[in-house]
Amino acid sequence: METNAKTGKEGVNLQGVPETLLWPLWNRAAEQKREDRLLDDPFSADLVDRIDYDFEASFGKPNTGHAVRARVIDNAINSWLMTNPSGTVISLGEGLDTQFWRVDNGSMRWISVDLPESIEVRKRFLSVEERMEMVECSALDDLWIKKVQQGSEVFIVMAGLLMYFRESEVRDLLYRIAERFRDSQVIFDVIPVWLSRKSLKGMKVTKTYTVPPMPWALNYGDYQWFTDIHPRYRIKRKMTYAEPFPERMRPYSYLLAFPWLTNRLAPGIVHLEII
Image (cartoon, rainbow, N blue to C red; front, side):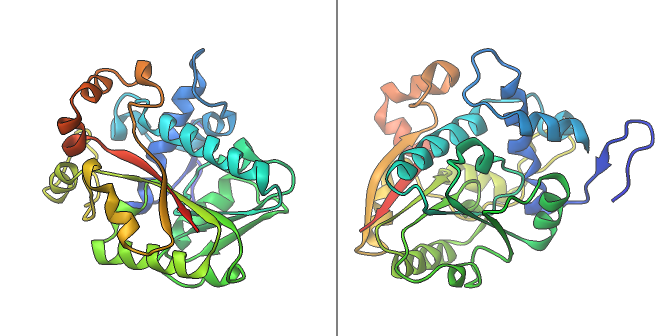
């Protein structure tokens, strides 16, 4: 990729779903500048300074949603590592997330899974640590699953991923995970049906950026669907984005007073256990 002679920044050539890896990066970097920040992520701020991309033109003013998601998942991983200090964390569709460095306990194993073009960008901008492995494939492929012995205890992260698949693909992926791994945990975010429908019609975030189609969605009130996929699944926790830090998610937090609206309109985060 070319380097901008004027700014010294490196360019990236990403389109479609792979380009979305820049969106949460932009929001996490902005969070780093706040005194009341939800997570300490200097790597993200550095990456935004190094990448030749007009983040604000594409994604608009920064918002808190991605920082909330990152903080919730960080906390869940940290809790899991307390009892599984040498465990394996598998991050599907990781993009340019810097989660490894935010939660690293010095002994965990980390597997980063993404499409080849996303892994290429990740290798260019982030170091590959000794306990980290990169796997170039779709999350729907079996390649990454075979990297870990069947029956192993793992923590699987799927942040900003499942909405880009079809319902049958989501169901099949979650079923295969439950079949392969025991005593493990899975965490991911879910968009509501109204947002999926809007994306399928061509949802513009700004004048220059249109969200890729997001075919799969599930309303917050229907999350029991996950436990119907496989008998080993249990919902450990579910929450809307507004629940963990309502003071940072106004006016969305006001929806919490109206459960029927929350169940239909709110995006959420789901944390599953595999027994």
